[in-house]
Length: 384
Image (cartoon, rainbow, N blue to C red; front, side, top):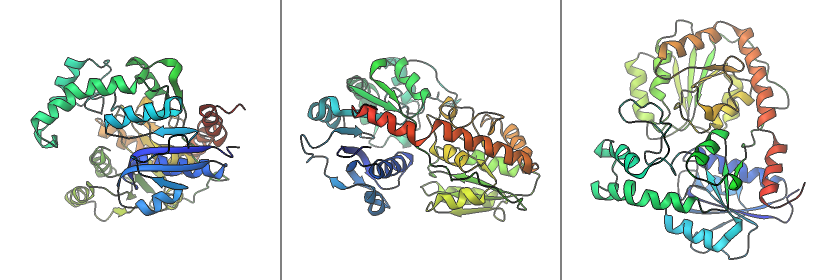
């Protein structure tokens, strides 16, 4: 299907440092299985880099990329503006920007307001957004005040202008597409390509285990509302066990919180190795996320394995989670409401099975291999 096509992925990190890297790994493997030759170019290595790089036919240094070797250059997370300019010049029409979050039109990166942490629906404006972005604790300024001012005020506008120049831009949800349109990206250059999410051959049928298992799976980086997850658990009256799957700098803080909440007998931590094992043995997925989460592979994968999901009402999850159909969406700020939704599922195995089946079907419809390959072929200029 993609025989003879050579595709390059360029990103900041090699390794399993977050969802972008998981997307790269899975996508590279999928494209290779269908005939493409896939190469990578990365600036830094993270834990797991050796395994991560097995998804690619070859690895290049970002400063030493062949001029005319590739049919498509996919530019993911790259922090240097100079490299974006270089890639646009080097690859021209073949250069495609992949946008994974809000970082190109929100200097705070989160599309949330300071203090209240409520979602922001405003278009980027240099002066207003720069002031908002500076309203963060000084310990988050990695290189000091002057560097932070340059980053948030001078550099940010320049970067947004450069990002708009890509001839092709790919987003992984309609929500991200709408945000880019709102912030001046040309509609004829935008492509929505949902990630391919594999589903088991048959809908998993789970035995009514006692107590039911609640799963949280994600990078443990503090931005995933893990405290909300634990607070929900602390309000549950039904018996349960919980599994937190993932690694990250926030893990030690979480472990302390588990002890403070007297949940140490109910919560277990596991490294992210073979996620399918955890999807299969869980009964419910509880994944609190930002109200403006751009998308979530974890939510989609949980639904693909027939797990009802309790998460947040983010439009970025709309293709994978529908309230009352394959789970429940509740605001992270309303812990009691989220706990009530989890309680409904804990006490109703028939409802869990029904919602799980709905999610399994939803993922097959929205995240199928056929639609993924069809849209990638369009990027490559291949006619169906």
